[in-house]
Length: 401
Image 1 (cartoon, rainbow, N blue to C red):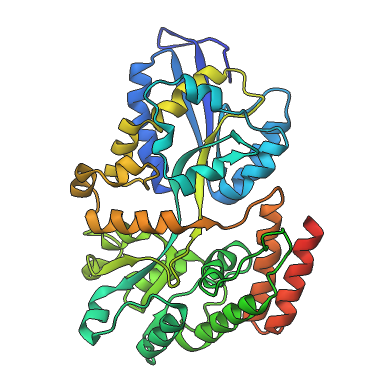
Image 2 (image 1 turned 180 degrees about the vertical axis):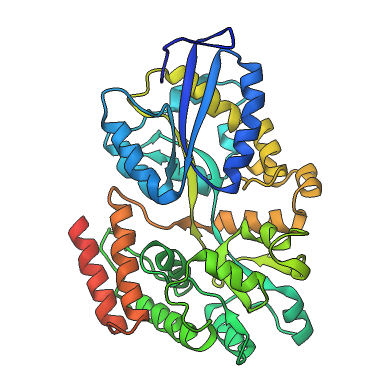
C-alpha cells in the first residue's frame, strides 16, 4: 500500500505508508535503525523498506516509475541514473521542498556530491552516502620498508611491483568485466589527465592519455596483482587485502573502517590500514541519492522522511554509527571524529570528495559504463589490444549519444 491511503495498525490511524527501495549495504542497516526514531516522532507514518542487492534495483525502479501509481514512494538513485531518470520525468523536483524546509541547510552538503543531484538547474536528489574511491594501504608494510605512499600513478605502479613477491602482491585489483573495472580504471584515467569526453562533448576515451592509463593498468595487473583475479570485484579484492595477501587496493573509502574494525574480517591486521587520495589526486565519485518518484501519491510524507533522514542532526548520528558522510558539517565535527573513525580518516575523505568527479554522467551513463567496462576487460584478458579495445569503447559510446 502506498501514498495517502489510510490503514489501521495496532489501533493507530496512519496518514501515510511509505515504501522505500534501497540497496542492502551496511549503511542501510543504520538507516533502518534510525527510522525507528522517525516513526516514533511521526506515528501517522509507517516506513517499509524493500532492501535488495544493487543489481536488482534498477529494473524495479523503472517498473514502478512507469506504472500509473508508484510501488515506491521514495527511491535510492545511483549517480549514473540521475540524468536519465530526471529527464525521463521519473523524479520529482525537490527545490520547493528544500526552500520551504527551515533549518535543512542544503548548502551544507559537500558540493561535488550534491551537484550530481542537480540536472538542468533543478534538484532531483539529495545525497544519501558516498562511495568515492581512495587508495587503501597496509601502512605497517610501507613504514617497515621506508616506502613513501605514492601520489602519482607512475610511482604507484613502481611501488606495487616492488612489494610483490611469490606469495604476496602489491595491488589487489578489480578487473571484473563491466562496472567494476570501469570504476577502478577511471581513477587511472584521471591520473593521466584523461577523460571520457572533451569540453565540447566529443568522445576522447581512445586518446593518448587513455592508452597510457590502460597500458599501465594491464602491466600492473600482470606483474603486481594476484594471479587468476581477472573476474575480481571489490569483495574479492577486500578479502585479499584483509587476509594479508596484498598491500594496497583502490576501492571505496568506507572500506577502511571495515578493515580496521576490531574483531572484524582483518583479524590481527585490524588497525594497520590507512586511507589516502588515489594516485593523481582525482577520484571516481560514486554516490547514492534520495529521490521521490514523480508518480508517488504522497510527496509531502515522502519529503518529510527524506528531509529527516538527511537532516544535519540525523546525518551526524548516521555517520557516528558508521555511515558514509555527505555533509561538510558532519565530516568536520570533532564529536564525529572522536566517536567515529578518527580525524585523519574524515579529513582525508574530505580531500577525496572535494576533488572527485562522477564515474559517468548523461542520460546514457549506465549503458556507457557497461560498454567501456566490457572493452576494458577484453584488453586486460588479451582478447584485444589496448588500442582496439579503446577504439571499440569510443565507437560504442558514440552510438549512445
